[in-house]
Length: 137
Length: 137
DNA sequence: GCGGATTGCTTGCGTTTCGCAAGTAAAATG
DNA sequence: CATTTTACTTGCGAAACGCAAGCAATCCGC
Image (cartoon, rainbow over all chains, first blue to last red; front, side, top):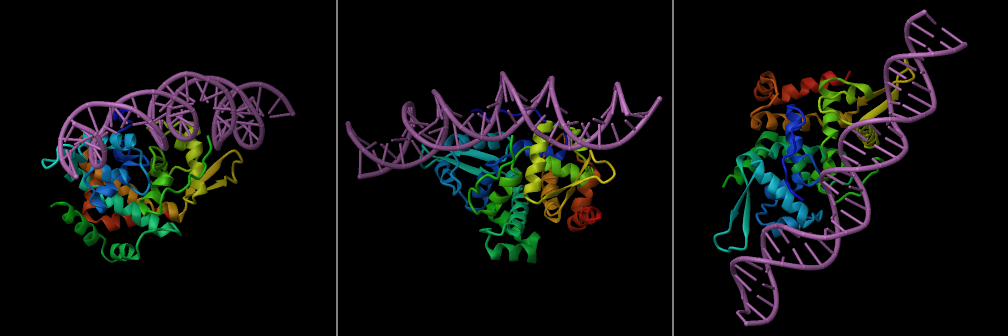
């Protein structure tokens, strides 16, 4: 299973994004990098949804290939790899948050905490900025 | 090819959305309903990206099943079906717009008009509200 | 009112992707 | 030095995709 770049289908902006993260797993990986601050393969593998290791491997390669995630060996442990969001990846936070908000609004069994909905509705811009600046160091 | 509801993978809000529109086509169909004001199967079929008719059929069924789109026979022509966004579907506009903005920012060959980027950056809320209120009648 | 065109699909079928389980190499640990 | 941990890869059956063709119902022109 190889993370090859698909030909682009059109130069529609929506399409550009979907060709990178338009599937059931990629945004969940980004979610864990953003909201759970996961950094290692084994952590990402242990998501609630149970991603398979080959799928995770493929998605991380694709995210790296598209410059949303960086992949650096851990200097303290040569076995481990540290995955981090790049600026380009961090720029996707608004997308993640909007999807989460839509879901929280329309899913009767949502697991979204009320604090999220409240903070988002109170001041969306500040909520996002908070997450982003936390990620940048 | 049947639009069956997949079991939900977790009650993570992001996941709820992705289980509905986490693929390469669904959001493009919604894009055409929102930005091109398409209403008929044949119009949606003629997208730039060339969606296959069986895939389109499947996605419309799924969108209807999840209440994002309504499907009503055209009273003036019994052959034709009119597809419309519901409120739940319209609520996805911010998601579409955020993805488009991210793509416009990061795609060197983006086809996004400068007017979109400008309007979005100038006043996001007003830009979205404009689209939404146009859709509501 | 009859032939042809249009519309909204469905059906077959080969190809690609998914997803589970098992395996592996390299490095750390005891 | 044997065991464990980590980050993957490999095989393979199942599901989804995507192209082409087909089809029933309806409309349109004459």
